[in-house]
Length: 132
Image (cartoon, rainbow, N blue to C red; front, side, top):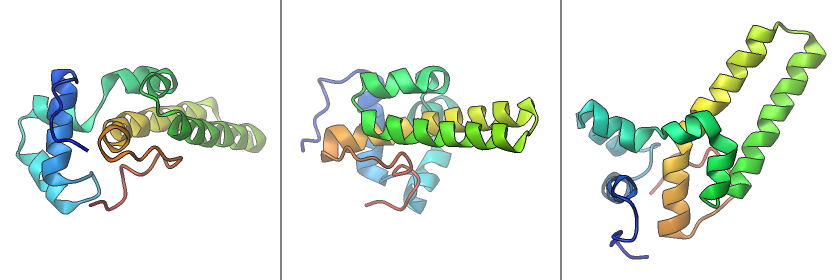
């Protein structure tokens, strides 16, 4: 577990350094430090636009297949419930967008946990809980 990230692209270096300094998204220190950043840097740390559009593929490319399978299972379950309950298509689309936004907000910290801390679990919500 090294604090040297020169083998990573600059965006990942910035994200990893931020997580090292301020912890994960569930911590109040993280939230305060994130609010202090300019909008562009805040978006770089907090959101991943590739995952917003292509989250299953992006998770696989990053080696986060466990979290991807869990999130995909949740998405399929939600879609099935919408179909069984006969809810309007707008509900299905809204839930799909919510899953994509959740993936985009989680992937940076999940990748940090995998690469830096050696944690590659099934929980796609690890980025949202209180962390060290």
